[in-house]
Image (cartoon, rainbow, N blue to C red):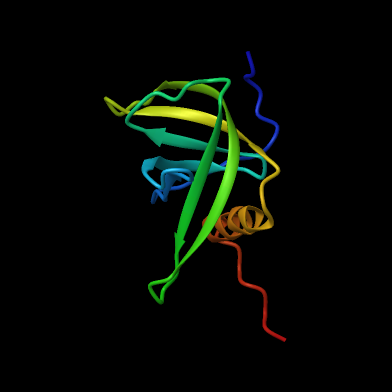
Length: 119
């Protein structure tokens, strides 16, 4: 059983919705992210060993949104501390550059690093 985490994960206090990219129906919320994976919090357990087509819809201030489609394999799933919710860990297959940009933006936002000085 995989227990050691090699990549630091970043917890998200405000959850972003995750959708099935085929049906565009919501399946849960983003719990945390890393360069190679993510944790999904859902109201239904996820099947392990199965590939999923996931979609993130990132809101912009002007009412528009950026869509990031991902293919991910579910590695594990267990009951969350919140009753009737489940946590599932996913490994991403060839995440697009936009996903890496999201991870980096969240890392900077939640690590409270000073912003770079403008030139």
